[in-house]
Length: 196
Image (cartoon, rainbow, N blue to C red; front, top):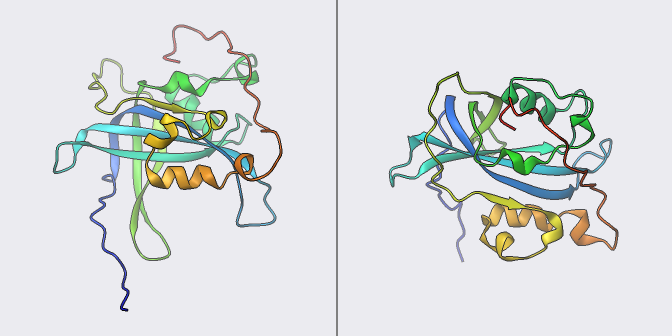
């Protein structure tokens, strides 16, 4: 039996700054860490489509970023959400923010390219900001998807890409008899002048 590396026709999202819309907010659960000096943390995945960047079949390119589910002062998620909103969070908003508010919200994302240990190029979301005033961002092509760990292996989970299913399947909530540690805070009142 001869085995070899299987080829892939996967094309990473083009590098640069792009118009985008969020189409996925996925709870990944408490993920294991490769470094014992870091504790396990609850992760979320945000997914965007780039309506002006198209694959050969006409579908929009998509890109995603995994975040620690935290609005702490140094958290990347907080920094990206504040630049996307164009406004810092208030003390009240920091008590709890529902990420599903991001679905279908337009933005500008800056994508950079990096290489993994195998030398393959992948796209990385470096920043997320509000679109310039007056910019029209085309409607979503992908159906918006929102998934919470509490949903288990439901129809939403089954429709997720296989790599996301694998990621969720390794979370602590699914692999030990322990209650989920992620609290869902009450929905805060938000200023209607910001998009979410």
